[in-house]
Length: 514
Image (cartoon, rainbow, N blue to C red; front, side, top):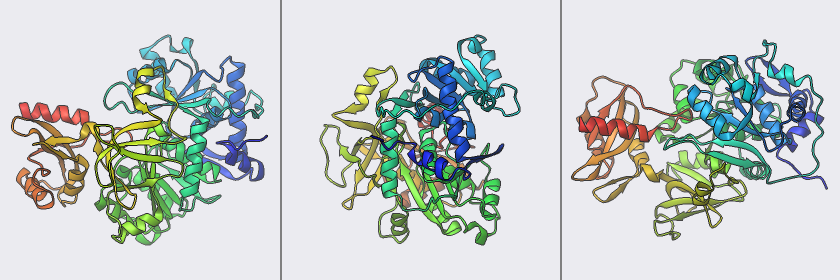
């Protein structure tokens, strides 16, 4: 009996709409026929070079066609794909390659050279291919030498196809092992609750990196619906909005920092309103930015909250709920409601489920919760308890079922015995017209235990620390308002736009003690 698979929509479009464009990147345009063919050739190429379905193949790549070919090959029965953050230092990349026990590497020539300088034996340990179309050993040229693999009729739902490494903001990254069952559960849940277009032949700019699970998930969702994915080698607000104004992009998937970067261009407002949808996630968005983007584009919005360990999505705030939010019918700051097929509960420090409105740790059970952490049984058992993934995020659920995230457990500030959400303080202060960017952390304090400390990037030189403190007291309870203010030129973030709070706490603590 034939099973529906996580790639069935892509196969459908390759068969019935073969010339429809699947991916456009800076090098060219590729049809669904070519995408499905190249991915099947990749499966054959790996097999004929001795790589089994349990082997790990790594890619160090920006958003480009070849990355999608590799990911789809993983779903089609090829080896497990290990996407590696292309912005990491060579030493960090090599750590991931070694930890994953990779037997293959695809990267651009510059990265390959930097890696071999660090590890001269790299090319003898791995089968390495350059992802440059002008290079004699390019990945696509290599694939052309092999026939297309037959699609396996046996469905092995628990076979891993992807191993994505966490951002490692609090230690060494962990390899999250994801299966086709995870992918199919994730896609099914999103298709059931998606209330924005993403129609066949429409164009989606994929700004989320495909070395993170969010970018992979959005790409698979779009391709299974017959959407054309538009990649740019690097994010550029002017280039992106030029394409929007020229009606060459219908939808965008961005992190909030990208939305912010697009706010201050001088593009024609009427032309910007050709945009149909802004999908966003990966880090919190402020109410100020969200409302400003709504006024600028007057399009639909779709928010995703999740994590690598859940194949990306736990909850969504759909287009209809965004309209209710803008109309003040629901409170701002929500991450939405659980996707179909997911159970979310809030657990306190004693391990008990709490009532609506009470804070605790988010725990989630669903088909798309990871299989395990690679070669780390202890961490896997700590993360999944009684069938629920412990997310490490603190939140509460409102009476009408909306999830409100307060903070990461490790980022919650305890000042004078009171719990303070750094996200709440950040959202309150970012509305100040002289504040360009902000992060809030706790720093050691003899009187309070921890002191609420605001790290501020000015948009106006006249802003002083007292002004920030007074503004905080006007908008927040006294124990939540910052008592310390530190000015910096920029806030350290990872590639997803998440604030590196462990690093910030160290910087701030050192400055306080100096």
